[in-house]
Length: 463
Ligand code: ADP
Image: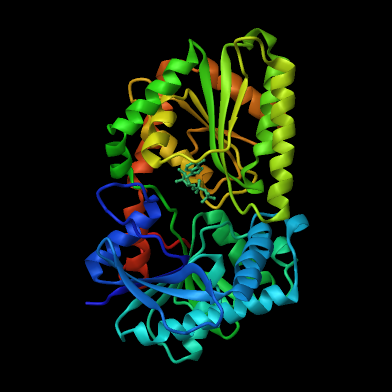
């Protein structure tokens, strides 16, 4: 039987599979790796003076993990540089924030070569290799160059942007050509697959038909595999003490008010600034609603050493201060802006106590918060999901209130509509959303990709 080798920038299997504090993706991959006696390979997050070229092999919660240490220059150029300052903004349509520095591109290639060299001795002839995300696009090609003939798949967790956007990347053709070293490339949505096909046909002069792309003298399959959450684990965690405690805490603080909730990493792709402004617009336009609602935004700081993230945080501090300064009363704070992180079971309780979720990214590969919010609801009294049309999740979750996150009026209207939505409509929408979240859970995502990669009928392959 073939083993699965998962390769990602960071490796984070849950230490104890029963506890469920790790993310759904980590849980699903770890489960497959335990069953297949596979290996999870990636960067330890540590740096050393000199790259050693040998992985540290450990067993974490029944999963074999192989970790490599990188050099400080690797971290600067590959991770902080090309991954976080070039590809991340570019893939999220922020060409204005993307840095194009040659040293970043060189570091990116060097680390991908280092990954390939270190992984090489661990690969057995029948192994399936599954590479995750934009950090490692050239890895497949580097493995091929070193003689690996195994099936290798790649999955992109971010959007694949429109052709005109990807064209702003120096050496974009080289990056896309690298994808053709894989047997299978997966995207979250049809929209991303279409953009990729557009590039293949109109930029690379190739063909893209029936899920097969031909260009650069090679062919490979490309398909749609929308990621989901671990629904079962999430439903279980609803009953946990932490979930119940947090549910009660938020309920007690409501005092007959309705709660709008946002939960995000503090990232410019999440549309936090626009969301705050839309809420301000809602308060300005609906004075009669004052004191009937409050907005709880949980935003955990991330990539705090990158200037664009520091700037965003400052702007959010300013807007939240203004909203509260203008609208607050002695016993009402309209915007509770929290920079803390919460455990998944705690979040589950917070989701359940909230009447509306505002998931309004400007661009997002999928957005799992939308799915978690739905899974956490009480079926007898479910909340309303307001979802950006630019989140990958919108393709599957059309029964949410779909908004353009750039239009403050559009979002303010949706808040009003959500607050007034009758129970019957909330239930109807939630049932349809929940059905979708359940059928497309993280196990289905993993199994569909792995079975397509191993050559069994590829149910999800889009035309
Ligand atoms: P991204 O991967 O870009 O951060 P997703 O919405 O796809 O966005 O996934 C975010 C994950 O991180 C979800 O599982 C969510 O529960 C978790 N998360 C996001 N924000 C927070 C927060 N403030 N505290 C705790 N967990 C969070």
